[in-house]
Image (tube, rainbow, N blue to C red; front, side):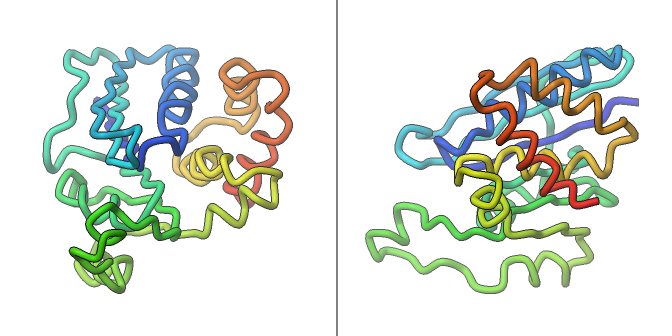
Length: 189
């Protein structure tokens, strides 16, 4: 049974580190893992999507609409943008932060209101939290990715030590402790 995780965000938020960490962890658990990155205008704050698929044997790195078990989103609008990829019984783990896309910044559009409430009204399981304030509490606004991974880890049947080991292997040494703290805050036992 293949499981599918989509990590969606805005360029520069650390979604690539999040997917690398998840891929490393799952490979160490003996799964066949495929990770693929789909870049938008990531350098300009555009969408960045990463697919992480794992199971006994995974043939394709791509996740189609209606196939994602989890969508991990760095931002509310990105979660709403990719909601059609979620399985019926899937779950969205989302940072409640609002990052205005270019059309909103230049005044050509307005940021949609009540996105999380609208998704929940459609019967979607949404786990929303203010990851930015937890990341800042851990020591850096850039640790939102690890707060999200901590939150996601609650839905995986793997001991926390294995996640911590993956952080040690994937994160530069000088940032390991801060990232572990961010992960723990996201996990929020």
